Length: 167
Image (cartoon, rainbow, N blue to C red):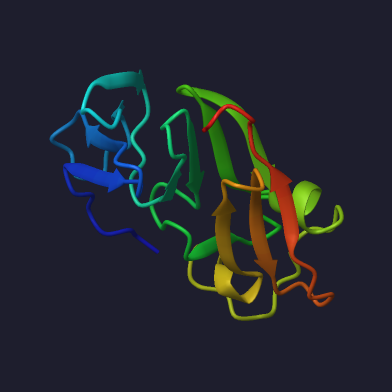
């Protein structure tokens, strides 16, 4: 399964007015190399990160210090890898002031240590529809948690702590 070419730039804003711009450095439309710049409420540069976010879903804290990137750079939050390709896939990454704070793994952090069980509906190249396993993700900045709505049989939502510095 081949992804569509990337746009040159991806932009995201939080309700507070902070924003980010992620640009790829190469003219190659499939390149994942680039830079992400986070801007404060007054459009001042808060920090830069040497990564290109691509199609990942973005959650940006009210002050811009915390970024959650959910999904893969190529397919966003739409697909997961089968367990024979990736045993404990990183589904989200949390950054604090531009540095990795924590990676969230499907088996370890969200599914009681159990690998993804294929439901037999695989796409070419070993991909599964993520909505069959994780139906939604929300960031609750007031409670300081990420809330994953799970479709793992037990119906339990999983909460993952966020860094405290995001007011």
